[in-house]
Image (cartoon, rainbow, N blue to C red):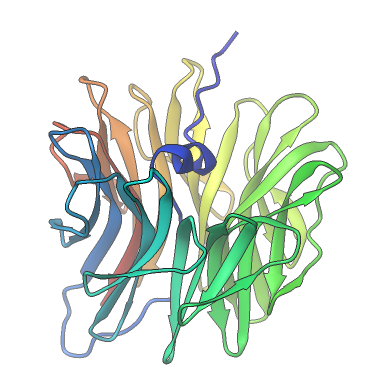
Length: 338
């Protein structure tokens, strides 16, 4: 029987924290070379996880390494770089944080900040607190009804969308809020539980990526478009999606799927057609996808021979190591400015 050692975000939350997030591209005048920002973490020599921001492969430490921390999401607006994540304190509690240009702000009543989105002068952060999911707008917290957590935020015009999970009939169910109001998402009657990790709005269409765990004991990648579910993976091997991005008529979904040898393999689905980002020799995962022009960027990780996670950035399927593999590291979010 295959051992199920999933690296879900809710498991990583217990140790480090995560979020995956997806955003609109923005244009930087007069520069044909894109700046690629990646958020994540890397362990230091003392075994503490340090929240990191990589710009074009060059790392910046967001925390000093005294306590465990992780950067879960990055968004760039003009000359400002926003990063959402978490840092543990001396009492052993995870505290939600927002870094603006490297300067940290503690988010009131937050235990995790999973996703950040900037619209005009407003900064939105989705995450969790002691009582469930929270959406912060300019640092002011709004609790989401029935929520377990809030994983992703996207702003389209005056509408604010949040994807996450709620409790219902003792189940955890994939959910979407629009302007704080819970929306209908079609969940299979055979689903034991489900989760929504990412939301993206294109025109009048709202896309949500996540998974369902069915009665047969399988994890199936789901893409909900305007609340209607589509299976992205089959039930041959367990699979999970963490991120969705829409570019024109193309819909990209990033996540992982188990192979026959029992390893998680980082995957990118384009319009439902799968691409392997690794050969499956070692466990890997794809946490975030971003499209800029004709280029597709994916952030994630792959284990090495020393059984350390190596933070990775794939551009059009070609991998770049963000860390050297000496210490464990993970890339959670990617944002490109062209």
